[in-house]
Amino acid sequence: MPKLALHDFMNQRIYMLKQLHSVLDTSGIESHEQFRDIMSATFDFCGLEIKSIAGDLGYNVSSVHRWAAGVTTPHKSLWPQIALSIKKIAQSEIDIIKSSTH
Image (cartoon, rainbow, N blue to C red):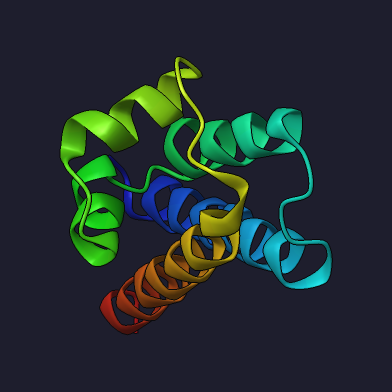
C-alpha cells in the first residue's frame, strides 16, 4: 500500500474509533437496537477484535461473537461495563495508531 494511502487509511480508522468513543461517552447504550448498532460499529466498521473485548470483560469469545452477530444481547445491567471496555480498547487502538505513524 502506498505511504499516502496507508496514512489516509490510518486517519480514517482514527476518525471512526473517535466517533465510536464519542457516541459511547455522550449517550451510552439505551436499547437493544442501539446495542446491536454499537456492536456492528465496534467490530465491522472500527475493526476492533472480538477477543480483545471478550478478554477485557472476562467473557468467552463465543458469547461476544453472538453479541456482535446480533444473536443474543447481554443483560442491560452489563451495558455500561461493555461500553467502558469498548471505549478503553478504542482509545488504546487510537494511541497505537498515532504512535506508529509518527
